[in-house]
Length: 395
Length: 117
Image 1 (spheres, each protein chain N blue to C red):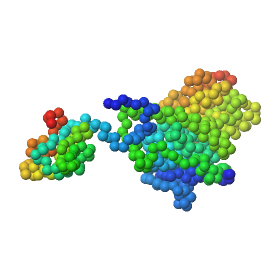
Image 2 (cartoon, rainbow over the protein chains, first blue to last red):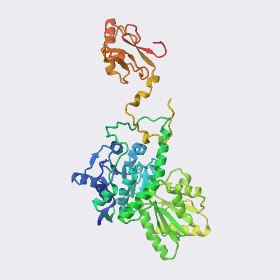
Image 3 (tube, rainbow over the protein chains, first blue to last red):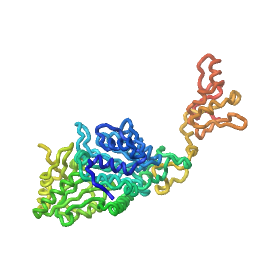
Image 4 (tube, rainbow over the protein chains, first blue to last red):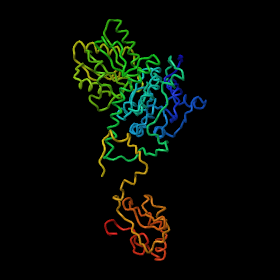
């Protein structure tokens, strides 16, 4: 049914891509790319996949080729990171608006300047309004599992949106882990065959995609995208349920860890959630009621479900690995959205933001522990002393 | 204008499912200049028909005659007048630069609204 391999996050994603065997992969091989496309290029060269691999001349072209191939009716995947994603920008929006269910692996890394290619979430947070479904992955296993599920989520007839699967740069992408790899046949069976709704290569039914769309209809097409996002939540859960049944894993909109009876909790995405679990275990050993919530689905943002999971707490800390410069209190995007969600649902739990790890700065267990200790004080006093903390920045 | 449809009634992503429906889009309103034809001068060579980027040269295919312009779609680009061999000959014979609405030309380009033809 499955086997265990020692894989980096990049390699795990490439492995999933090999098993999905997409029709087209377009990518541009330059730093900051990821090893994923290198591994995948090998699979192509070795004849392990039937994929048409398009080695383009820039990341902008990579996403453009993906949009074209997807519009033609192909199952399409790509991978990028950091500045590479930034160069794709214009077409990232077009992929979503043209309703191309492209699956993209994104290794989360910092944006320049100063030049830095190490882990933070600045790249993904910039595309949060672009219309893509955004999934976070704590480790290589989750990145692998999410890529496989992403194919089904994006291609669902009620969704038809591109999906980006995130993992932390270097921490996950270059760190080797034990990964359960399913049988090729099982993955093939799970993802099935893509049946595009309006393939341009269906020459019996000629059609046009990407035409001018003025004030008379553009707005209606945006409204359709809203509906697709609304439909996505249910589809993500249904696909997860099928995946959990078939592969014996447990995915949802987010993961909770020691949260039900917790008094205080941290909300943090990707690899840092793994470190936080160790800290939770340690503090639980001291009898402290601490917990964790790890977002998996960031777009569509599951506001109601998050509030439901967090409303019993006495204090919450969000840990953001990026800054929304100039936003309220110069906080991070995850914090801002969660604060809005809690306020909207009338939940008044003291909440603070901890920005951390920018440009690949290490985040240590003792730093996460200090956040929990802050939270326990806030829970006692009921008052947040400092709304936004830039954790471990040198004064 | 046709009744505008709601977001549930239209294909996603602005995809256009009817091939060749550009004919419904009346681009003639963009025109600042309009082509005017001298019937007597025309030699029905079809050069204008061949080059028109908007398929706006009307022809009687059976009798192989150029019969006029589709002004619902003609954007007034003037390419027809530029490729017209009769125009070329008239200009060469005149030995001087001619105004683009000179009466001697086969296809004249006149300012929209100046003439009723």
